[in-house]
View 1 (cartoon, rainbow, N blue to C red):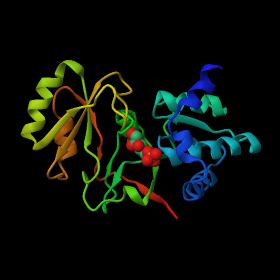
View 2: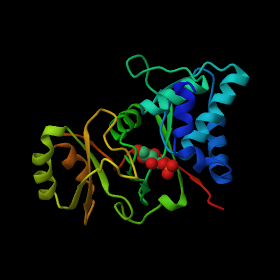
View 3: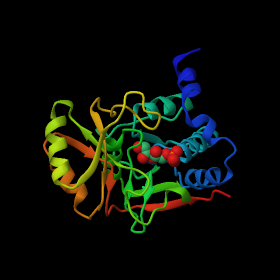
View 4: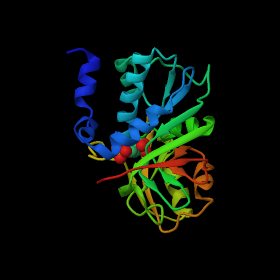
Length: 235
Ligand code: 5RP
């Protein structure tokens, strides 16, 4: 088996996404937005994978000149496997982007980062003109932090310092993402460590306050970004 097939076979989502009609419907909606010449940011999540497959089909069938900027190595490999041409932020910025999320609050603020790619995800969302976030209703919460902690990417040698500073910001639980954790990536896309942190209160300034700690590369809070939420029905 070649590396690409083995990658696809091993990806957890492959079981998760088959025959889920609500997600497929939103994935098709995303694919229908593709225009010839588009540069598209490609994020992660089960519906995003379905959308990418649908986009790859359109590129092939309609011979569209479309390029993707993926948010992770895994997605770069998947784009290659599907024949979706890649580009980078050195050459282009995305016209639009699609990505998943772990939590969405009523103000369309998010928690992301279960996959450990929040740095590139935030960079792409900040660089892109239009951002579609695809979720099912299990991701909608009245308050961020309800079901997921806030993932924080930390330069390894800054761990103790960052931990101390996070406590000052009100972190009530700080867990180094375990090496054999079943939920999420162990280390970030950039080879850094990830702290999963709980806060009693996630205020509007917390994203920037966490980011300002020396040694923090990025965090999974997306507060006040320009996002359009697309909901996949679970029925
Ligand atoms: C990863 C994320 C993902 O987008 C998130 O995990 C979505 O996954 P799914 O749609 O399969 O639940 O934020 O960093």
